[in-house]
Image (cartoon, rainbow, N blue to C red; front, side, top):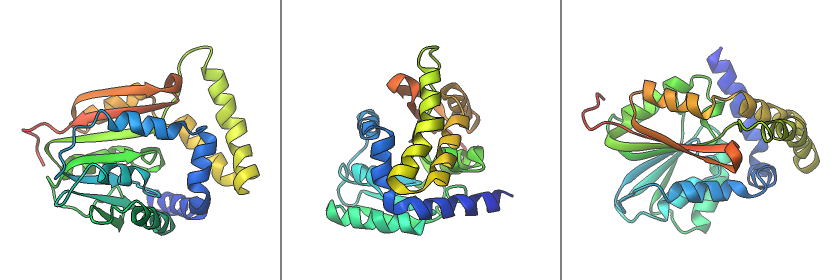
Length: 240
C-alpha cells in the first residue's frame, strides 16, 4: 500500500515538475522564499559542514545551503522524482555551486547513507507527501551526527478563528483553480491542497520530532500559521 502510494506521488511530481517553481510562486504569493530565508537565518552552519536536503525538488533550498559552504563542505540534494532533479541540476549550474552540491535519486524513508553522516538535514514541503512520516524522521535521526540539526519547513494550518476559514477557502477552492488556470493540472493541485489540509498541526509535528528522539524542539510560524519551520537536535549521547 505504501509503495503504491509513493509510486503515485512520484508520478504526480514528475508531472508537475515543469511548472513547479512558477506554481509555488503563484500559490504562496511569493512568500515561500521569505519563509526559507527566515528559516536559514536560524541555522548555524559551518562552511565545511556536510548537509542533506531531502525532497529537494528543483533545488532552491539545496542551493541556499550550498551558498554558505566551501570545499570540503557539501550538500546532497535527494529527491524521488528524476524530472525534479533534472531541473535542480540546471539551477545548481546556473548558481555556480556545483562544487558544493551532489544530487541523488532516492527515497527519504530509506536513506542510502551511513549513520552519523550529516551535520544538518533539511526537508522543505516534502514531509507531508511521505506515507510514513515517522519512519522518515527516524531515518533522518539515524543519519545525523550527534549534535546535528533537523530543520523542516512545511505548510501548516492557521488556528485563529478569523484566519482559518479564509485559509481553508483558499486551499480548497483557489489552489486547484490556479492549478487548472496556470498549469492545466487541476487534479494534481487538488491532491496537493488535500495533503496541506490534512497534514499534522504544528504542535503535532513538534511531538513527532520528540517521538523520533530529537531534543531542543521548537518552531516558528509564518503568515498567521500557513507555514511553519520546525527545528530539532540529535542529542550528543543519542543512539545511532
